[in-house]
Length: 477
Image: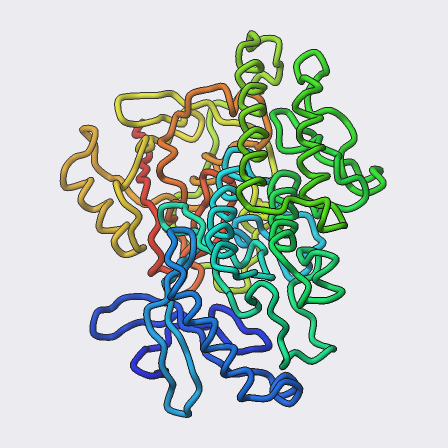
């Protein structure tokens, strides 16, 4: 299937305005995202095709004009064989919504991010919004799925289809058409989309950060900040609004200053009245920097405490653990619990294997596995990952051969239980540059299973995506 001169490789998403496809420019083989205007019949009848086409083209031109490292770049604008407009933008395999494990049931709990990563993503989003607001543009649909993550783990804001110029009133908007996404749209935007200003976008940023840290949407007491910190406990089912009321550490370790700073930040970011909220992305970024600096001071203080005080010693490990080493093809309907994982792709058990650091490799004693400490120097496709491992065997890497791509079962042993103090205090055994790791297991003919080593979960990806390869071998008796 062709749209214009682009070969369609698959559907990335579909909404009321149209569809976004994964596509390829045949002459170069370059993978791109292609957004096509193909509105549902009800929307076309309600708003009119001419108005929708004008809005669609304006979105493409706006994205192309606002040149910024945290805004997705637009490369082409044209019409397909049926006269429908489309535009082409940079493609990324990952987005924040996928990393968080958010689904169409947005109210369901999602994965929590490590605070330093959540702070960094938020800061980059604020930088993008500062550029937009400087140009007088309000996004009006900031949410995790509209924040792409590049191979360099950089936020790229997308989907300007609901954006507007500051002070502009849309004469084509039907009164019944909502603008924005539930839970992320600010109260004033839900009441009157044309009244949304910069504080509405910043409200959505606050919701996103809250969710990254807590795994939940803010409601009830938005100042409850017992999340996203070392040794934070999971919310109890008995908590009235699903949020922890306890301090994340013993009061002798966690200062009141950080808890109070966290509360103050979210009370301002999520204030119902836009006048009480942050008025500029720059001001919100300044307070975010102070919030993170205080958090880092707390972590340093915790790490200065003798390890014996922190508790949580590793359980005794069995002498040998049998781990599947033969690759499998699961099929598209395979459930994650078939890998021994929960619904968010995380290991169901929290036992930490004992690893031994060698010269350029790491030994998993119980499973009798030897791992590369790092991996491929660059993110690569799945076929390239297999070629990379073949090259290791040719080179006799670390004086050994029989290196291979690991299975999901083997990779799952690298996924740490989240939220433990020592995760912040210990030097990492494995190179953290390799965030997404290919497995040898396939899901379909075009997809393979992978792990996010930084976040500790298993997922799948198109084989054309660029991830890292970390080879493993079974230790001989």
